[in-house]
Length: 174
Image (cartoon, rainbow, N blue to C red; front, side, top):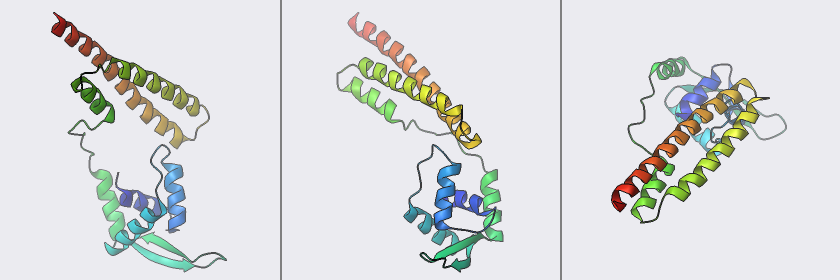
């Protein structure tokens, strides 16, 4: 995910200050890792440096001074281009789940126990997400659907891995 592009997308509605952008990011992208304030402000500085955002005004409303940023025409063109580009499918397996199973088999221990525990954890998380969908906002429901699909894919892989490891064990024992 490009944090800069997401912030530009949030600025399309109207100019906003960093605190507001952080809150909107965390609210509108439920399930995503929350942004740190430092990351928001560093990203806004890069967007300004690149000419994609500009300071619209500075507010002083009884608290700390707030710099309000607006998207520029160049920023809107960049955002439009980013939205048109396809996200390439991941070329590599970069899952901690996969890595643990491989290392468990290499280390001489069986991965079966781990896989069974992981399956139980995935099923528990799927139940939790399904319950959340009942009263969630549209963004929360979309995030839950996305997570559920990924968990389902992991569960199918876990079942395949259990079967393949059993076949491999039979082969070695024969």
